[in-house]
Image (cartoon, rainbow, N blue to C red):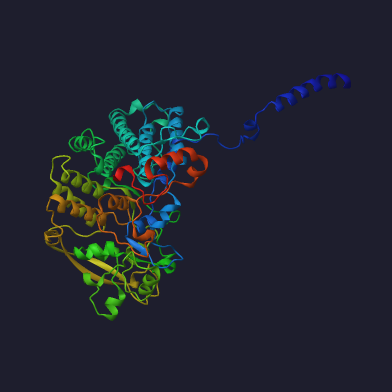
Length: 536
């Protein structure tokens, strides 16, 4: 019996041993105790988080909204553009996987994830191109099939992004009209949407609103791309191209407690509440226009109020620093409280802060007003301009009704000991605002022509304070409005940088195509002052 047992067992053992040796490395390293695939909805959620441009980043410094006054925390130099622009290729790979998983789990060829995948492509590729110039696009995202993708021209990138947005809108129209065409199963409907509650009708508005933004960014290239026609078609056909109709449609990132605090909150108030002061570019424009938003976003200079006895509710009490100042000089002045700081009540008193708008209704109103002002479509530019200003006022709870109204301003009291979360730490002041009086000012009331365009761009800049990432910087770069200042503090030999260098990875793993792109655009140099195609 023992001999028979051995004769039967040995062959089986040998077969198992041989079979085991033939297993691939991937098979041997696979952990069967964890999932091997990710649902489209989780990939979707991850992509949504990656597209957020948070407040409290260098983007706001580059737009000259506020400034660092202490070099331990940062500086105001444009030389930092040499650190490279954004790299969203990893996120775009997840977009591809999201689309594949949607189909594999019951979605049809046209489904919500596929439609939004086109939007994400347009969003991320255009953003990288706006930062850097020509970028890999057509040959990108092919993995091992192409590790050194060629660069597409910026014109090709923008043309393709606009085409993706057109296609995304068409797919969403079909899906909204007849949801059953999206298939069945978990891949046929949105889930885990942190922005718009899985509402595809709102996403369609976002797609078309973003397309208007991209067309406006191409204002210097109307002879190369059919910008005017596309703009007029969208503005003239609200049924085919629905747009945001109020701030309720904003694509905005909401902060929650305790898992996701607003970047400025009671916990870090003591550390950095006075490490940043307001910029003269932003505060100076507000005070020049006698704009009540300054009472919500900033605080009066304590030196001007306590020493020079100016009223804390006087526009003269608010002052920002010149961004070009040497950082040591700015630090000394800030220590003496000669500048306005960000409003502690509005930005530091809670853990959730204000929602961070990524693509919003006020910006859309100014973008439409700009297009009409430029003659791209017929319409009432002033009406859109007014809606944009009023939407921004309303975001800050500032009344826009005719006649005098009152809202409260809160300024942090010197020597307060209970911290920014306690209302007793603030002095409260009634602020009288009259929309009719505000709008009647020569500098505010829309005049049309070149002066009217400047007014639109100034108000757009004010409305985007702390929102939409680099948009205000991009707009300045394109239009030179509002006026940005330079000096020792901004570095770069007194120049506002015009682009970010390419990510370091391009120099090391895609050197041949990287150098070709530099030669065709910037004379062979990865130059932060190089003029990309969209600005020529």
